[in-house]
Every structure is written in C-alpha cells, then in structure tokens.
Image 1 (cartoon, rainbow, N blue to C red):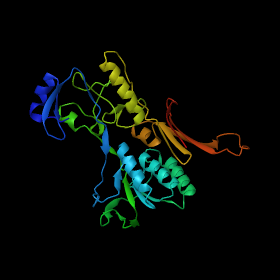
Image 2 (cartoon, helix red, strand yellow):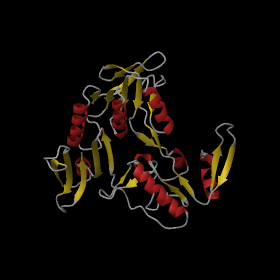
Image 3 (tube, helix red, strand yellow):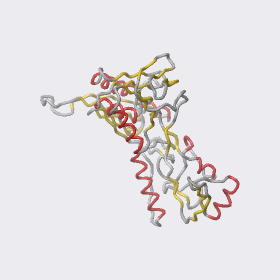
Image 4 (cartoon, one colour):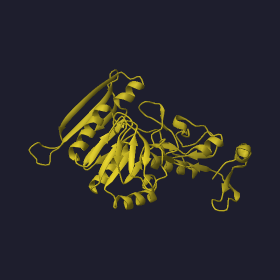
Length: 322
C-alpha cells in the first residue's frame, strides 16, 4: 500500500486506497467503507558500519527467528545489541544453547523500563547464574562490524573489540506510520497514530490498532507509546468490533508486561518511580524481599516487590516484581 501526496485528499473523499503490485509495480485502487491501519512497527537500526555483513539479524518476523536459530546452531559466540525485552529473551535462548554472549546496552542499565534498583537486581541475577557465558556491557554502543563476508568482530564506541559469530540488533522499534502521516492522519507520541477509545483516527471511518498507535495511560493520564503484544491484541479486537457495527471501547493501558531469564521472572505494571516523578506525583516507594513460600521448603526463593505510591492519595501508582 502506498499513498500519493498530490491526490491524498481527493482519494480520502472517495474512500479509496492506492495499491502497488510489488512485482509488476502496477497501480490499482481499492474502495472501502471502513479502513483499518495495522502496520505495526519495525526494528530501530542504529548507525553502525558494515551492517550488510552476513549473520547480522533483527528479530521481528517468524522468518527472522528461523534464520537466527539456524545460525545459532552453527555458532559459539553471539553479540546482542540492546538490553530490552527482546535482548534478554534472546540472551536466555543463546545461553541455554551453550553460546557465549556479549550483550551491549547504550544506557547505564539493562531493561531500563524498570527503575534502576530493580534493573540492578536483574543484572546481578543474570551475571550470577550465567557468569561463564554472559558478559553484560553498559554505557557503550556498537559503532562498526568487522568481517570479510560474514561478521567476525564488533567494535564499540569505548574501543572494545569483541569476537563473534553472529550479531542481533535489538535496539528497539519505531512505528510504521508514514502512510498515515501522508494521508493527513493525526500523529502523537513518537509519531504513533493518535486514536480515541474506539480506535478511531482523526479521519472518519479510518481506524488503527497495534504497535503503530499511541495509547492512553490510565495512571499518568497521558498519551504514551508502549508497543506490547497484549495491548495490540485488545486494540485489534476493539477496532474490529467497532468496524463491524457494534460498540466497544479500550479505556487505556497500564503498560503491564512480564518476561523471564532462565526461571527468573521480571514484571511491572503502572508507573515506575522515575516515570511517576516525571509526571509530577509526590512519590513514596517501598522495596520488600520475602520468600515466595514457607522458608523450610527446599524450593523457596526470594521474591522482591517494589511499590510506587502517591503520597497524597495513598494510591498505588505502579509495581515491579522479580
């Protein structure tokens, strides 16, 4: 699908979408009564030299996962660029398949969506359980890849040179909203499409859902862009019900998410302490560590919970647990 700036308004009034055949480049038009834009997001690609080398991957589609797995089975070392959810889940997959992994994160903490004190607990656990296979590098970024045909080394901004058999770029995503912008649809945070509670865009009869739209946060009461599969599922269902002529709303999200690393679970909901302060709340926090079952049971493990509370109302703004 593509749009033509010169005829955008005209075609919107006619309720048509311009189509381009990928192979023949032939142009045609499709009429619609209701239109849904669900173009998702694409990997964010940092400015790194020699990204065209073989064995350099992003992870977004099923085919990406298949190619990564095939290469992993023939590799001994891997570098992951990015310490977010995808980076940590790939780290787990590589470690259980006996690879040595260097994970490089540009910011000061991995999983920076958490507060720093919880991120520190996560890093400590990963390094403790996988010290022989994992090397976490923070406050550094990759500037170049080196190799003849396929990637052999990674060069960082701080001068580290790391041998590797494969590289995964997991530095985040950006919304695919260019076609919406060209059509004159209102965009919001991070250039994601702005929608109301019924998933309607600023143009009548055009809806949007998934990683390409912004969300309304129920705690901060601000528009945010938090692309998660769980939210996308609800948004798509809401849009479909309304397109089908019924009535449904999605009031907003809490940004709830969960992941794990070899049995160690990491989860959060609502606002972190950092975000709550940024939104002007007078914040109280508490961090509590207790065993998850009776201490005399051999399977007992520590569970740490951080609560973020508004001092004035005493309402919980968010929680993080590992």
